[in-house]
Length: 248
Length: 246
Image: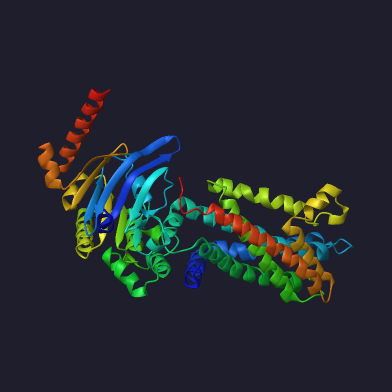
């Protein structure tokens, strides 16, 4: 049990989150193994961002525990080891891409060569000296991603990193996520684009604050008899609704 | 708290300011224009009112300007998510607040040097005490504005609200600071209130420098009161910077 907690990068037990009057996550438990790309999929409003906020330790939680790399989520020891990408770009529009990334690099305590690497990784080298407010939406979200990557964290929590990006760049970013996982890093990626499921080691399907499925894609397809992730997800929703109806 | 992160934060804020030429120009030019206007208004009045009001205004400008700039800037950090990201990093709350204080303090020194020079050499303001002391007091006023601005931004959800906090925080202090009538002529209750408010001490200190050749002994207690306010405002402000939010 103790060993397992250390082996898993993220351990969530009986997490309960209430935002306003709404219970966003009623009772969520999940384990995320190290060194994998985990896709967090599901409709918007289902609790994906809230779960991610809880994992990086910025979400007030009403109950349960969230453990990351063996420590309580958000504890000071984790702040250098966990990288967080917010859904809305959280970069300074009045600074250049380089100044934005360089600032986070200094905060994380890494050298300016890390800045150049992070900018190159998101393919913004040609725009490094452009102010973020003059960039396109896709470029802005890549600048945002560069800020998350620059500290070279062990666990990356990425809230919709590929939204609004063109197919080539999306493919490149997913290749990069796979590369990071191959080096032993854990990448938790949320998406509502189901076709990105094929690039994940495991899939978490989250709907209305509950995990409908936690498995690999082949397991999911086998269980539901569906041809792809989207179809499988719809099958699971129908199953859950039927189950809920029968119980009522 | 970490010196590297604090300085990186101050540098980042100054870099943001540097990109905004219009804001910098307004911060530097507007106080001079207002001082010039004031000197002109009283140009034909026999009693030299400008010598009484001019120094007080030198204390008010950095306070008001830094309050506004800080409350808007930190509100933006709260609403755009940059603060949320920063609070997942090793950055401490103190790094952020001190970073803002350093950056806007530096800005305030530039503003104070230009405004003081303009008041003295262009508008003919008579100052008996040392000019560097005026700049030092202006720096404390600016830090006070920054600290209160940080605090106010914690209670604002939109930039409209943040702007409205300016009259709420600043105007009562302005009315009671002794600029309109000397504080000892206020009704007793108002005088007691003015004895607590920090801007009163800023204006007192500025006046001391104007009328005394060796004002330091009177100025230091005023600066101590302002410093106490800065510390309290920063401590309260840090409570509004929460790593975890609902």
